[in-house]
Amino acid sequence: MQAPPLLTDRLALTRNRARATETFLHDEVYAEVQERLAEVNRTFTAPAVISPFPSVWAEFGHVLPDDEILPLQTGAQDLIIHALALHWANDPVGQMVQCRHALRPDGLFMAFLFGGQTLQELRACLAQAEADVTGGLSPRVLPMGEIRDLGALLQRAGFALPVADSFTKTVRYRDALHLMHDLQAMGEGNALAARLQHPTRRTVFARAAAIYQSQYADSQGRIPATFEIICLTGWAPDASQQKPLQPGSARQRLADALKTAELPLGQKDQSG
Image (cartoon, rainbow, N blue to C red; front, side, top):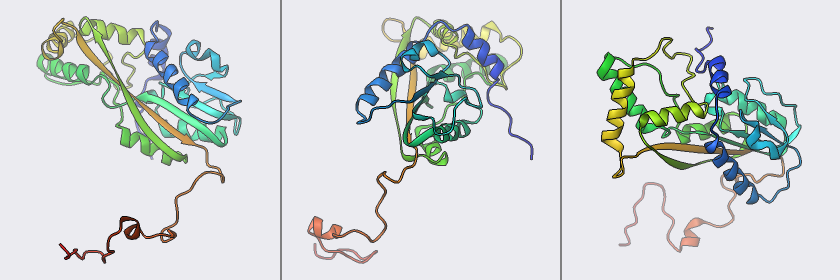
């Protein structure tokens, strides 16, 4: 069977990250992790962080690159944080499975990655501009999953008690070219394996900037850029964890609790 085409050109991604100078979204995720961990009644003694920017996570001590094969040891960690890199993985489920195997029983996994609403404005403007100028479309912005689909990956990877939620950060820029320059500074430039291998016409970017300005600019002429960050949380399975009740094991009927009559399925209440 032929292997599916790769999503990410890892060499291009590495080059993009090597030139990165801006980590403000990674700083946002770091603050979010600290807040969430403060709510967990647990002391973690063997944490690991997977991140392309180790300086942000130096406090955690054990920071690893987001290679396709993660340098993790089986059962070595009680906390793993996958920090704003999983959206670039060619095999995200595979990386999550590796993390689960590296966790001790009842160890915590947290992954933060960009969700489907990220850069929705820029994607729409680039698509319209390229269609206007060239009559076609090319891969320019990483396709990002929706929260329901991404949450399902936790179960596929074998995590217990899976939870997916998200928060949104809206950043305002002078114009679309300023935004695209900032994406380069974040190491989030186009590293798609199927991207164009020749320079894009300047008229495409100029047209996209004009569309962005006309459709999204506020009263001060600034444009918004949406970043949706999804948090996936799961636990390595352990016998001590809560489990759902078996069907039919309830000791009290719901109808009794609601003080109403219990009717057979499909039968309507004729009392009113």
